Length: 223
Image (cartoon, rainbow, N blue to C red; front, side):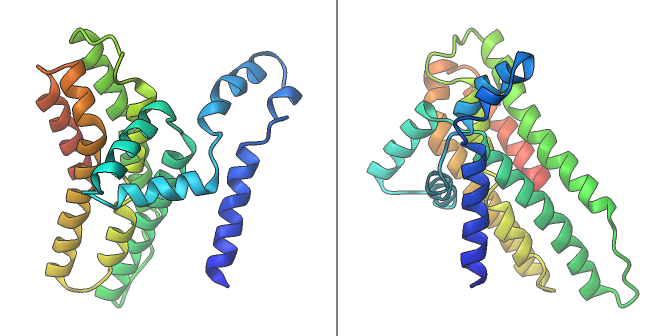
């Protein structure tokens, strides 16, 4: 029953974001901006769920990996990355407080964790693709094989492993926490590599290691 409610709620949010007449009811600059952004939110709940599942598979089957890479390149979306990032912020803050509750009988909720998690996650979601695109531009890349929207989409979905990782870290066992963090980090980086590495090699072979190092540093900071 709970999963059915969550599925209905999620589907409703996606459908609301995809309303075809929304842009027509707007005018001026706001309407123009909405029309420009609407294609990147025009995804169904099935599309987002499929992409979330791909983000949790570090080594999908060869055919699936090829299709996923093409899908993220040809049909990047912003709704999934925003939803994943927001869920990660809430989970990181909530589970962080819950872990402190288990460890301290005089626990007081630290709402600053929400600000910290939001700053890290949203900051990386906006900053990492921007830095990567600037590096590609000044490195001589013309964006034929990789573009800013694709980087945002892939990087946003790469945050998916942070959600189950944060839940696993509530267990009061340090080895379980470390294993969860390392597993989440590995899956996230494997997903980024699987969907951007080939394009980076084509677009900026001299920068590919530096750019991947940027992703590693950002994910290590979050995880």
